Image (tube, rainbow, N blue to C red):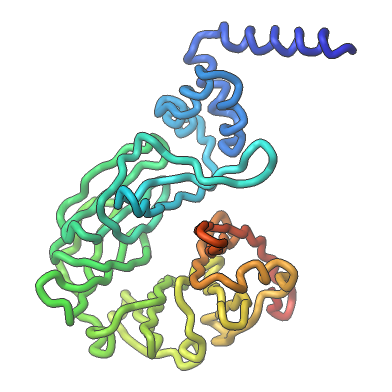
Length: 329
């Protein structure tokens, strides 16, 4: 088939799709994997507007076409704003950050947690602020004010309850924990007292495994069990300076920048191990001065930075995990 004939047929097919009613086009696009939307947006300006429309995501939700997406909040130094992006795959296979234009920029920062199709944000410079973002429609809902105004918050989710730790606004030397019920969309009345050792230190590590909350400051690791309201220490967990960690299948993972390894902690076996198979990939992170791990659809996304001359770059590595008999990862 000659190029002219093939191009004519492709043009005819494209015209046939665009001649359909818009609700039919949305119904078709809703069945396409979300990762292909950047490619579809190149078809025409009309497709670009449909791919970015709220109607499309509403239709996807009704059809049950759900998939994992990684949301990122980046700080813009010149505008002093935090803006929302989605990590997406480009037509050439590479990934890039795509701005979500209808999620307004924020002039404050907070901590985030995902519950079902929603992202919850608490804390930040607006001490009593709470927001809920619907990832299907990218609409924002303001939540009831926190029972205790807090800043520099960090939290995790257990049984659809969000456990939030932060500094009291009126007492920077004291931390408390409050609980938000995502089913009732209300705050629970009790303010939880923290272990004395945690009051005057900042938490660098926070994770939830097997319905327990694991925390670490610059010296110690602590474990809190909400059902028993019980605090305890974990010496094995404390043997590593873990921070900015994530949890996949009830194992804690973090990037050890000093040894340039991904380490895993098993709370049942109470042991550390090193993730194998990354020896050729991790050297890229050698000169990174910070790194974060994020759980992403059963995988790990490792974010790290690079500074080249006057350019500041953010890199992301997607790591698939496989557990062998004997516990090797």
